[in-house]
Length: 199
Image 1 (cartoon, rainbow, N blue to C red):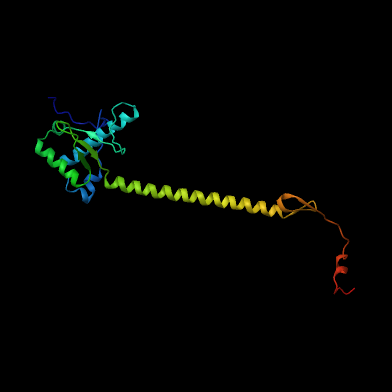
Image 2: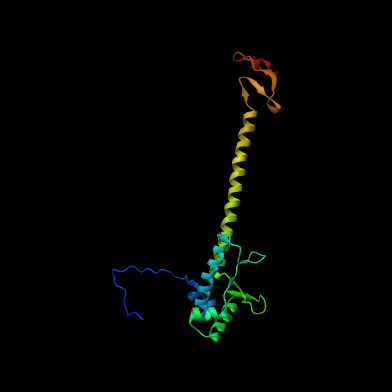
């Protein structure tokens, strides 16, 4: 055993390896029932879940997901006892607490085979995903409106141009010239054409 060695103010707090711990397990009222063993077990299970995802990335033959695409881990009770430095009864209690909080589910594989452990997302993770889905839907809806508005403007400009006289030639249906040629009249000439005109 090494001697006690404190951190110095000149040191950098670096660890070769660490496990992420969801802060909401400490703060949310729904997770107050979790013991320190249960919270630490969840963190260790999520760390192992990361290895399951790496199996997919590396295209290994052994993949840790089922027919529905749900990810899982394999973690024997004996291994958990060794990792957490606790007895079997403490492990069983931690597992039960995580199940009650919908943070894990287990499926039996068969006799003398370890259970499959599915990890549930925390409440915070679920809420964040819902917010992202709403934002994505709003952005898509906004994008459609912008496209439609732009197309309408283009269509309006196109239609207005079709109704203009260009070089005194009227552009008719489907862009064909009607054959009508504009004429130039002297000032006041058209007034004589009115029946009620008084000279």
